[in-house]
Amino acid sequence: METTALRRSLQQFLADRGVSGEVDDVVPIEGGFSQITHAFTVRTPGGDRRYVLRSDRPGGAKLTTTDRALEYRVIRALNAQDAPVPVAQWADVDGSTLGAPALISDFVEGQNFLQAARGGAFDHGELADRAIDAAAEIHRLDTTLLAAELGSPAADWNSYIDTQVEAWRQLEARQAERMPILRYLASWLDANRPAPVELCLVHGEYSLANLMMRPDGRVLVIDWEYAHIGDPRMDLGWCIQRGGKEPPNVLGEHIDRVCLRYRELTGMSEEAMNPAALSYFVILSGWQAFGAVLDGITRFVQGDNSLLLSAYLVSPWSLACSEWLNITDNYAASIDARTPAEGGKVGAPS
Image (tube, helix red, strand yellow):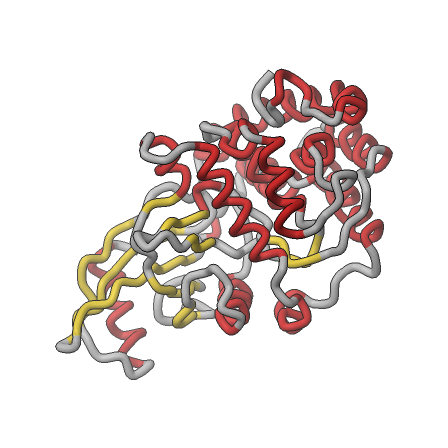
């Protein structure tokens, strides 16, 4: 939607909900692939408030398909627990006013961790500590208060891993061409399960770009479209995975420190939380987001997706496959040594 039209739609949307004030300063926020994001200001006699709008892309330009209404309900449930997330204010669940399903939350002043890491003002070890602190806070939340939004968890840890491994197999089955590497990774993941842990709330796309640092030092986690009840190591594995594509790989660079701090904060055993175990989740966590990439490429090939980005994402997909295979090659030695393969870093390009 063009910016002027979007401003008018936002004005009407808020007026319908009894919010008086002038919508102004509507600007796109760059960086996300999945949804379209804008920041905007509501000006009132009592002061200005800044918000963020996350809305679905048009059908032909979607790389992923997730539910804004569900994401809104998840964030609201997390707000009720005073979780480290921005406050969700409103949702247009069917897109009848804003042109697409959307949610509106408070704007977070400050920079994300990726910007902070690249800017040089923060030590990477300190950022790793803060990222682990926020992850541990999320993983300690009461999942019984999220049952209405996320459903019941898997019957047990192995059942959860079964569903994740099967997702890899189903991903391969629905592609335009056969991809034996996906079948191999599924079989490897099935056969090399680490020690089980208690299931908890998982963000699902935990990365430096989704960690916001407020000026007061409080860390807030944004973008909850992949939240589910699962293994907490999925979040750390995915963060390391993303760090290999969006350097610096803050967690991967400090893997021993990451494991130690997480164990201290949560009481998880060293058998369950160590560099080798995290390397397993670098792979396992990849099916959902990279699955969306592959599905987008297949839709692009079939003419059902007009998003040219799909073609460009072939390159990071190939890089991910190389990293995953490198992990499988070095996994046994990594377990024996209780240190990550390849010079003390996990998830770095080989």
